[in-house]
Image (cartoon, rainbow, N blue to C red):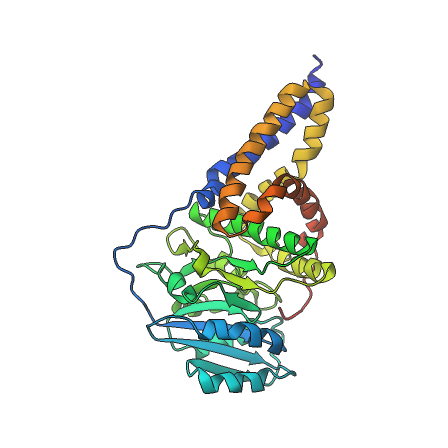
Length: 371
């Protein structure tokens, strides 16, 4: 056989093995994760930090779920009202009459040259009374009344960062499934890599770290000029295998209001993906090879079918698909996204188009937008 005819098959096998490597080396860690047994669970004082701008409707729906947490130790809920023009102020005043653990910080002027929510978040952290900080968004609601307790339980000696899962609320429609799969796929990566000793990001919908770490890192000074990155770039700059833990417990999830239109979801993803080029080089390589393998897998599969024995090609394809199905099934069940599994071959194909769609974020300058 002409050696040139082997090239598509050899390339396909290489990409398939690379995919299998990621699934067996990293992603299986989430799929088969078991929380460590702890003889004693201490409850430590916690400050929950939430920033809001013109989100009165979301606060009315979600903040009571944060305020009504079943947590016996000292805790506070710090809400930074960042120049809201709606009824946020009056709504918070009404909630304060019922919940005295609520601490409201009013901002009445914009921060110069600090786009996004880094300034209000920094103000909230400086106003916090306690060492352990737990971040979420105004459009998020905890999955249970045990959210604070479950997240803070991960703090052992030397632990400075705790990563949680920020899911999206389920609703009807194709867009909701796309949004939820995207959140799952992102979590599959950052939670699995953290479990594998290579933490590289977290999501501000459900993220905790020590106040002392924030000040030691000089807050967001390293990337204050970027509108995004208050969660992933901060974690990327200071997380390591020793100081980072994950919490994978459905009582410790948060659920956010999903984007209501394709255009808003695409704009959100473009904004979030634009920070990836500022990750550490080792993390960019780690994620880059995974992205490349996703983009090449199906084109090389089709090319190999034309130029090589189709039975061998299909065999390699099915082996990769089996490994992926096992990891997806167990991981989706763990993260409460089990209804998405039936579509997993389509999700895998979709990821090729997804990465191509957002490749431009590697060189685009992110828009200055509060999010």
